[in-house]
Image (spheres, rainbow, N blue to C red):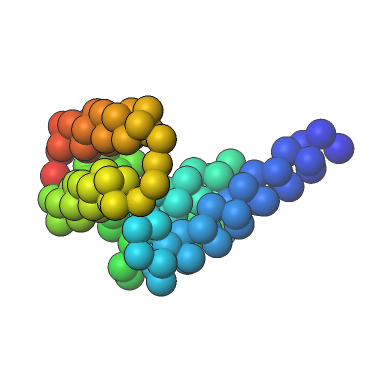
Length: 122
């Protein structure tokens, strides 16, 4: 019974992250690939057919495989992520936001950008 609940939890996690990834295709600023990476990871634990489908996907499968094998992020994705983080940081100054958030968020995003650029390209 516990095994069945575990598989159900992994499948729910895979579906939720897959849904967020699909939303990310049409919503600017919401990333797609990180959610698909998470969906494939959840699928590997409770839904092997979904994992296989994601790995064979013509658009995202190669990116997922490169991440799994080399922890690689394509250069184009690095530039896109960096641009979105810069845009997010800049937009904080256009909207009412607490000063702590205006300082903390850009600092965190700089750390994330540094981490992203340290990953291999392919």
